[in-house]
Length: 563
Image (cartoon, rainbow, N blue to C red; front, side, top):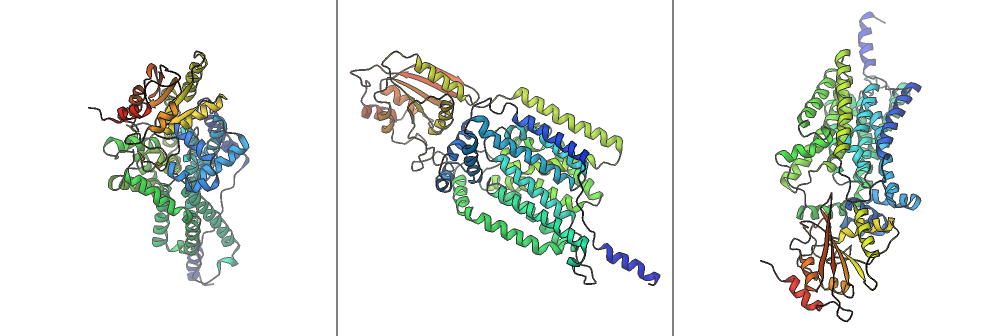
């Protein structure tokens, strides 16, 4: 071969760079195991120490419904796709519905997400993966939701698979057919690269489907990944051999998600009609963002953004622009799209709706540290971020106020019920009616059953005028017919009325006025925090075994406007 031909041959061969995943040695497995042990300890410690709060009460009720109602009734009450609740239903059938058992599913999902974050970080560098996993395990926001029987950890798990798949595709995007026309399948190295591309494709497809079926805002994460890969295919000729596989993956995701799309549209209409989240104006933007980018620190948000931008710049400088494109898109685009929707359509900008960016944030921040070439600077940055995470976790534990104390509320009602004089007959009245969910679970944990009535009707009540159209099963008290409440409390000489201070479902305190108009006299009121929950005890003077005021007269008095 002429000497002059050697450079051209080498250039031709360099067009294909065979991909091989980084092998995991025994010592590395020990490091990964240690990180996962930290994640497990933080997520299982005290897991069942507190009762289910309101949102978890929804999960408990959702999981009790039939598979048919998971599609028809539950989406009217709980604005989330049904995948998590279907999983929780099977989980409860196997492990019970106690607080620890229900939350264990989220704890395990949090540990699994930590592992996937490690694997995603290893697509950049082994040590990036280790640090990313450790930071994810120590992040207070992740620990908190690892203690919640809600769909957010499942959403985050799906997002971590999306991240891993996207980084894997970015890494191997240079593998393609050479100009000689040699088929990829005839080269053993290229066959291996194809197999690894398949692993990435399966991961991102599975992650997209899980995320889409776990949380509605995951659409923004999927769009972010699609945008990153679209730009990659557009500007990188070496990546275009991946076009057909990625199109097939997209079609598969759409096919598996489209059955839920009509429900999503209906839920979106409810959210756009009325929702409780305020616009992310001014400080609110940073207030929500701080949970996912700055360890709960309001003042640290912009430092976190600078660190993430520095990580992108460092990766681009080291020739990792493809991976930087994926990471930057998965961090920034969901936040910007969410913000745009919140400012123009309806506010949905809240920290737990942004949890899908957390895996990419952890990997990008770890890359910003571990890719620093100067050893002393790298060690200093490592010590700084690790200390910051440990300190933030300690502060979170010291400031944590706990969940709504439905166990103490149930204990008060039961204790008062036990000490009533013989012949007194009690009922529990809740406004809004959704408060019956966590209270019923707390009473079940005590193996106690008490008659309970929701206002203006028992949960679920999707046919009445809802306070929030996105949650049609908990109607407002204002303007509703309260005659059913009058009939329910009739014949009971004691009513335990449980509500919230400044309850938006009953802003005129119509239920309390209604009870007084029936002749009941309030004898006690106890406030519980957090949640501003109030327990009012009413006692009725009996006349021949009946309440003093006729229900019709009392109803008229209660519904009369106040000035």
